[in-house]
Image (cartoon, rainbow, N blue to C red):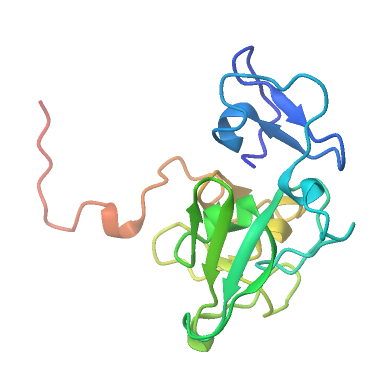
Length: 189
């Protein structure tokens, strides 16, 4: 979920016994916080008897075995239609928070963005799914979270943000809107 290989004694990486996806206890939510399950543990996709082995993420439209899939309701046409039910990568939903929210740590609810807000992924060059715009200010570079995470183009994916190669190594992660306006004085204490 956070894609970090680091762990600590109180924040172990727990592997699903069905698909081998790994999640940190703290990143996963209430079910794993403070305890490592004894015996077997299965992620939400592996627990669902209706899920297929190769389930596509409703957001990025990709099957990436190393990314956690959670139950998802995807609404098209601005909440007017019945939702498409399936699964979505938790990482895709966290980064695309403008279109998604979590209900009870167990369900991702998403709305398809209007056509004029859809972006072409600069990595796979597809328009399908949610390609998320770089979190750095007014940058317009966009990519699917799954494409960026496993790309050789040096995108950076944090827990809730994505950065294109141009901004991936910036030390200052503030958006341009949060930065000091020209002419504003800074006060140091």
